[in-house]
Length: 66
Image 1: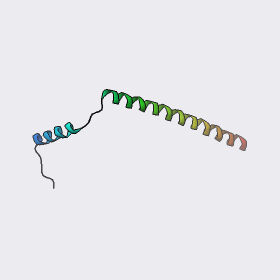
Image 2: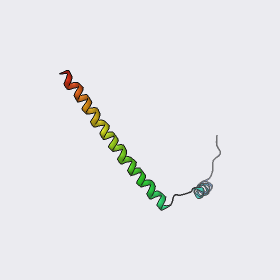
Image 3: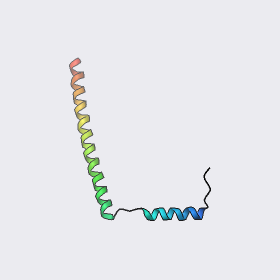
Image 4: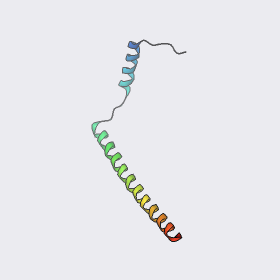
């Protein structure tokens, strides 16, 4: 079993680990956010086009069989 750490020591350790983190700058955050929105737009456009194409092909197949 792991040894228990008192809350004060735990908070000191958390603070020490948090100080080691390299936080992104505001500019890096904005660029990353913009890139996420761009990729979401392209993914949505791709899946919309693929859905429309597959729907058209399935409609063509089902109408020929009638």
